[in-house]
Every structure is written in C-alpha cells, then in structure tokens.
View 1 (spheres, rainbow, N blue to C red):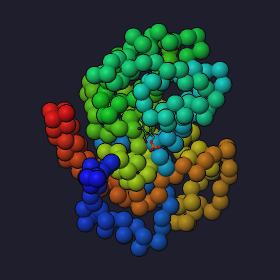
View 2 (view 1 turned 180 degrees about the horizontal axis):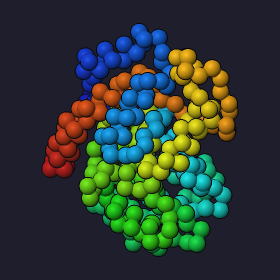
View 3 (view 1 turned 60 degrees about the horizontal axis):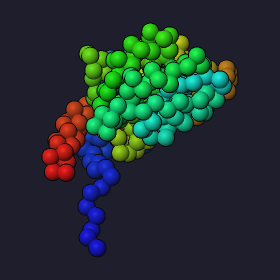
View 4 (view 1 turned 30 degrees about the horizontal axis):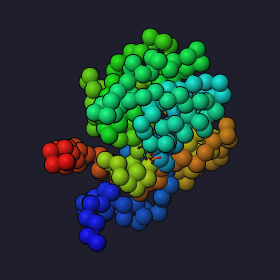
Length: 273
Ligand SMILES: Cc1ncc(COP(=O)(O)O)c(C=O)c1O
C-alpha cells in the first residue's frame, strides 16, 4: 500500500513562537491573563472589530454569541446546510431551532440569499452565515436581508481569518463573528477561538459567561488588583490560556504569508484535479 503523504494540516512554528510559548511556562502564570488581553487587542485591531473576546474554541464563541443575543426556545436561526456541525449545534444549545437553507450550487458552496428567503418564518430571529473555506460568499447581501427583516446577522468565520469583503473583515460584517484556532484552521493554535462584535453589551455578557460569570478574573486576584469575586450569573469555563494567546499574537503577524501558501496550494489542486 502506498504511504499516505498528504497531512490534514501542515504546521510549522518559528523559533520565536516556540520561545514565546516556553516563556509563558517560565513566567509561572498560565491561565487567562495579560497575554490573552494583548492577543485580544491585536486581534481586534487586525480585523477592525470594536471588541474581541478570546475563548476556548470557535464553538464556544458561536455559543456565546447565540446565547448573548438572547436566542432561545421557540426561536429559529437560519443555518447553511453545508457546514461543520458546530454551526448548528451552537444554536441547538440555546434551545433555539436551526433551520437549514441550501447553498447556491456545488461551485458556490455558501448560503444563498434566495434559499434563505424561502425558509424565513415569523419565528426567525437570526441568519447565521458560514464563510465556507474562507470565502465571503453572499455575506453582504445576507446582511442586507437580515437588516430588512429585523434579524440578527451572525457570522461563523471559523475558516475566514484574513478574508475581507466590501472593505470589512468577515466576522465584522454582522453583529458578531466567531473564529476558530483549531489545529487545521488557517491560524492554528491547537485549540481556541475568538468572538468579535461591535455590540458592547454582547462583549460584556460574553466576557462574563466565558469565566463562570465571575465579577473579577483570576489574573486580577493573582496580581493583587482584586481580592474577591461575586458570581454574577451561571457561566462556563470557556477561557483561552496564556500559552496559546502568546502564540496567537505572533502567528497573527504572519497570517498573510500562510494564507498565500494556502491559496497557491488551492490553485494547484484546482488545476490538477
Ligand atoms: C464552519 C465551522 N464552524 C465552527 C467550527 C468549530 O470550531 P472549533 O473546532 O474551534 O470549536 C468549525 C471547525 O472546527 C468549523 O469548520
């Protein structure tokens, strides 16, 4: 049998990146702290978002968006029929119902405005678009449709770090976007995600929910800035850790070069297959 030579993803890390991770372990502080805050600031600037909230996965980011927007039982959210399970699961976990709309065509594997219009109902609260394989698809037209119907436009930008459309980064076109740093994504940190939003209230709610609903974070207490905490609401442990944040801040700087390599590989596949 021939040896399998095409890996699912092909990662390499610079000595500077490895050193940044090692430095984090030497620092003695590993959980969400100053490196996460710095990564959030760099990420927000990179994509042009008002708020960036680092979380444990792209799925966590999607789930916090859906729950933060108040979606729940009786609500419907339009989701593309061609996507990874997490896009719909995030809706299901709020109690809302994902309603699948078809893609445009095999050559246009993204949510189609025409198909979405066909599944809207009085219970629809949001349209959740996926920038499939990093393609913006019909993002701008879907946002217009959402606005015209008074619906939230949510973006699953798990594959789309580096994609811009109409002068905006994908993920900042709608009310909120979710990015993934899973090991096969174009900015792989192993695990992790980022929620971006222009809505300050959603950012506050997401920050609370990602860390058990605590009024102060552990880093602030570690550094002596706070002495205590209140549990303000039931939350989750959806935090990103410092080592991944340190790596993310550096990998963000060479994202463009990595995306260029992917585009070159895609061109070869398209031509040869
Ligand atoms: C379209 C899409 N949305 C969401 C996710 C979930 O991201 P994560 O694995 O970081 O939870 C993935 C992939 O993993 C994805 O492909």
